[in-house]
Image (cartoon, rainbow, N blue to C red; front, side, top):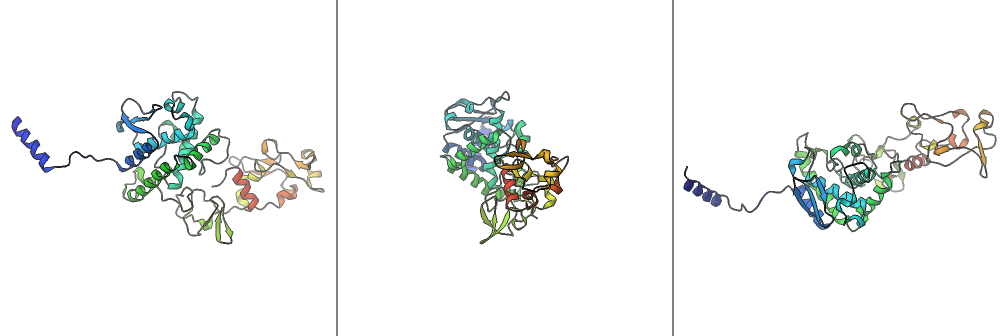
Length: 352
């Protein structure tokens, strides 16, 4: 074929294939590129970095060739937005949000970002689809159903502040709309995707806006947190009315009874401050050395929040009372699954 022949073929191709000034773009990428633009971030791609923020307006992310198989541009944009929320508006004009990722000095901030990411994505059924990547994935995957629940992790209070910015600050609308659009796209794509596709991890949002569960046999009517109310069933976690036949959310828990006490122990741990010992209680003769006295009267000490009579850890050994037969009346009258029981579990972040 001569050069002239090749030129003529190229001309013919242009005639037969008009509109080549357009190119395909991934719709999920477009959703998040648009969201970033609304927040003052211009997304550019480069083989030189994995992710970098210049402290002005440019968010540079790796070319797709640098991705893991379960990475996406949308997920990386969302993650950097969560970093910005976690660090707050005062760090928006700082390179890489003021974080150092070559050592562990800012690990708590990184973990807080993960909790923000999970908490924002969960109501839309997107926690797994938009999960974090790299070596931090195990931390993210191990987060509890409520990633903002009270706990000992120092990342939790940082994450709560970041989450508040994400749901009520000036960025809230752009983030919420991007998440809703992603969920709408996932509702179309997920049923068509093969089993190994990341899209299959997207789940329909739960009506309560809590994270959707993954067990179709669980229903709101069979959940410990759904309590009878004047208007039907009221979910303690969501603070909203629910229908008994709704699919259970991520916080679903079987009704609490005495059989669950050995795994829980919330009432004997940090949930309450003091257990009074009434006059004439069997403990006065059974274990008088364990009773403490102060201006409030006789009570069982709780060093570190844990009752001195509590044994076990709920895992290697069940939680048990060392003086169960002689326990104070406040303990004997404590109803498994009752209001005080549920309150104790909420205080310890044991919803689900």
